Amino acid sequence: MLAAALAVTAVAALVHVYVFVLESFLWTSPRAARVFGLDGPTARTTAPLAFNQGFYNLFLALEIAAGTVVLAAGHRAVGATLVLVGAFSMIGAGLVLVASDRSKTRPALVQAVPALLGAVLFLIAL
Image (tube, rainbow, N blue to C red; front, side, top):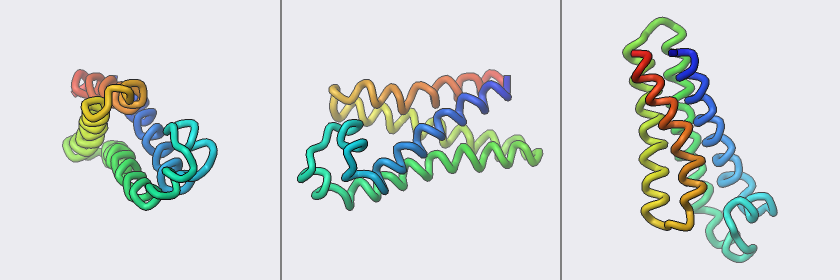
């Protein structure tokens, strides 16, 4: 069960790394425009904000990655704490996204559901 939990939380982390790249490095690209529904002027104006926001997503992914490494090193309590903090932070971010703009339900689900499934599996495994 723990292996399944780590696999699912790894998917959640990869989603956040992808968003990090889009927000921090590709914000004014056609790809980010499609993903986030941006026009050129809005993307250019908001690029500094997106750059910063992207790093928040990276840090969430790093919490899960660090927890996985610490677990592999045999430190179960610390590793579990890091993985769960990362997963629950992702879930919280998804909830804030949908609460702030109902039209963002799909991206909120993409952000939160893998983290939620991974956290549930992780808690069962503990």
